[in-house]
Amino acid sequence: MAQQQSLVTAEMKAVIGKKGKSVVVDVEKGWVKRFCTSVGETNPLYLNEKVAKKSKYGGLIAPPGLLMGLYLVPELPRAPEPPVRLPRGVDGGGTWTFIRPIMVGDTLTGTGKIKDIYQRDGRAGPMLFSETEVTWRNQKRQVVARMVGRTIRY
Amino acid sequence: MAQIYFNHVKEGMELPVLEKKTTTRQLVQWAGASGDFNEIHYDKPWAEKTGLPGLIIHGRLKAAFLGQLVTDWMGPAGTLKKIDVAYRGMDFPGDTVKCKGKVVKKYTRGRERLVDVEVWTENAKGEKTTPGTATVALPARR
Image 1 (cartoon, chains in turn yellow, purple):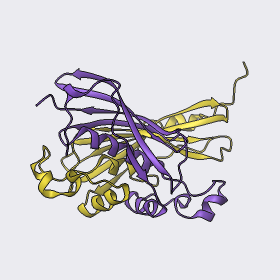
Image 2 (tube, helix red, strand yellow):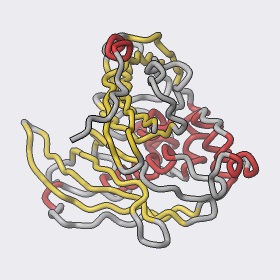
Image 3 (cartoon, one colour):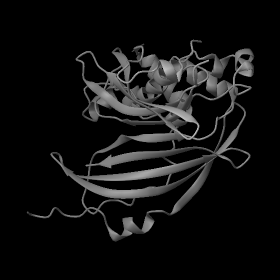
Image 4 (tube, one colour):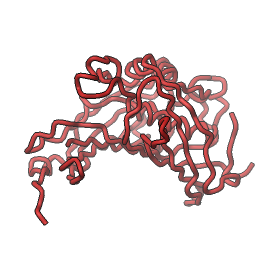
């Protein structure tokens, strides 16, 4: 079987596991409200202080989508350019793990790293996948969530 | 807010369908809320110039729809542990995106009562454009 050209270079392997700079976001009430409007979220745990106070959280929380949506491309570490031109790049999806509740008023710090870079050869030709992992901590330094995003170049 | 309990959940059970009638305005609102200002979501000539048939819905907005599907179903005492989605197909503003889900497994791990659900967005042709999975923890019977 003919071997396809490897898109994963030594330079790429060298960046796997290296931490990027951190990003800080304030989970402001107004942001959560605007976010809920954009999605069509009506859950009182995000919007109604009275209801949220009586819930198991004891106050307003952020919807999971807030972190799922957060556009971080400029902040995150990037995979080096592939050795051949791959004109198309798409967001392939992601995995979000929620460890502790994110409260409205929290200040979150996200630290990203390239988790993996690998190649898959499909019908559209060789595809280069890069996975970026972001760990989110609150102001008490507790991990609240982890995200792995997948970018596909082909 | 209705609450579902672990004992009431059965494997194969379907989640109530969440329908989203999308608009370009919504994509602009999402762009503002998420910070994703890629023009392919609100500037039609730009989107067409890149080879797209028109404006497309942000993948992550569909992921957020699926998050809502699950959190609406699990109720205020439930906890979303994990969600995983893949953006497979395009959807367009003006489309009604149907968010659907099905229970695939219920089990206990330590003191937690967990349920795995398969989730997806579906277009008018019945194609799954954003398939995924989610895990929630649910309260025991009252």
